[in-house]
Length: 195
Image 1 (tube, rainbow, N blue to C red):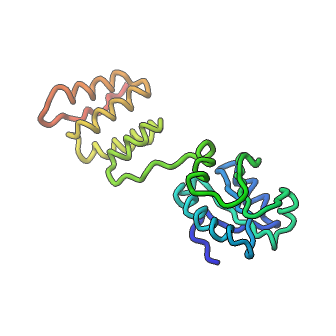
Image 2: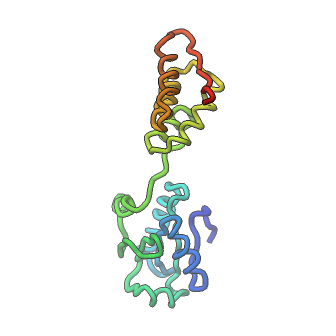
C-alpha cells in the first residue's frame, strides 16, 4: 500500500516506541489499530488519512496492522477494531472504538491538535493570520518584505505598527501610524531609527 504523505506511516512492534511514543513529544500521533478482514477499518482509514492531511504535519497518523503486530495489540489491550488512540507527550490521551463520523473524530482531536492557519495567497492575509495567532515576529517579518515592495499599503502599515506596539516599540509604532494618518496619498514607510 503506498503512503499518501509523510505524515502517515505504518507502525510495527520494532519501531512503535520511536515512531509513535517519541514522535508524540513533538506532534500528536493518532494510531489506527486495524486489520485486513475488518470492513469498518477499511471505511475509517481513508477518512483518518484525509484528516491527517488536513493538519499539514501538525498531526501524524500511525497505522498498526493488528494481525501482524500482536505485541502492540497486547501492550495496549486492544479488544475491538477499529480502535483509534491519540498519543501526546508519550501517553494515550484520547481515542475511540468503532467507526465514527468525521465530525466526531475532529471534535476529539480539537483540544489536542492545533489546526494550521489556512495558506493565504495574499501575504497581507498571511500576516494577519500570524498576528491573530500571536506569532508577532513571523507577522512582522512578512510585513517588512511586503512593505519593502510597496510601502503605500495602509492596511499593512497599520498591522506593522501593531506588531511594533506588541513588542513594546511604542515610539516606532507611533511613527508608522502617524505616517499612515499624515497622508492619504503615498505614505512613506519610516526607516527604523538606530538607538
